Image 1 (tube, rainbow, N blue to C red):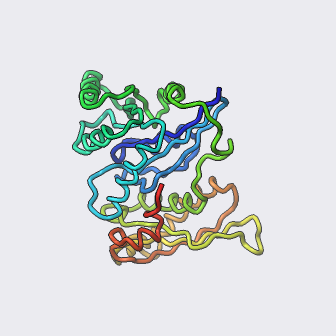
Image 2: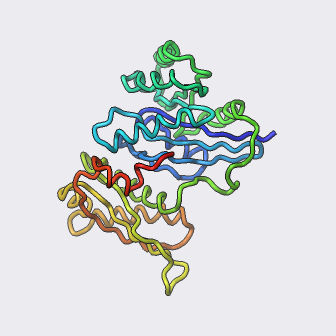
Image 3: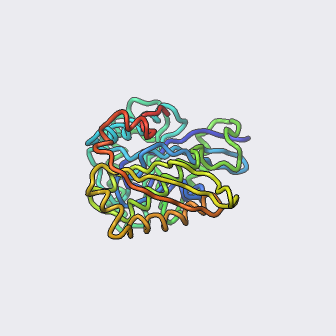
Length: 299
């Protein structure tokens, strides 16, 4: 029997949702960073084996929004709850329950989808008694179908998890070709890889104010095996633009060099990456810009 279905991964920022997805697919399709709210869109990752196809939906970290973009991100994550076969509510085993966790649990009470509590980062757990107390606290607030523990970073217990998830999925076809790992276009993945490098190389207020647009990508007329990509890094203030560019253009060059390696792995061909930076003041609070940048589309 072949089973297939959709599984939403929800939780606070930085609990390891994107790391888990990349590990399961054995390919990087979701960017990761130590900065909160790295994931802004839903990212669909397609897992295939002989008897199943599982479409994982990596969602933005649910948080208390401070701007229109943040509100959109939280709404996007919560909107997946009724549209999937299973919900994986991921928490970090190293953190206490927060008000955001309680808000997520409140939302879960309104859905009929089976919910599994997935405790991540068990490789960092030293106090098992404290972990058990944390799990009991969650179980007292919601009737989870199961409570499972993994380390997404180290790959601990991820194979048993996949086997367990299949038991919840209905018999069904392959919705996507076996060689497809995501339904996002290359332009989106490339823009995210560039944004990831910005997150890694900048600090304080800059990461949350950044958006990357792919202006154009095409094969060079004289070199058919060379992909030329022109991209713009959008920020909200002139001071942020100065940080992105760096003294003598060193920072934007470093961002481009680091991103080029990941894009090369994604496309499998030589690339020329041309980066620019521009200021669009307060874009995260403007509906028009959010729509133009792809943040107001429905799931």
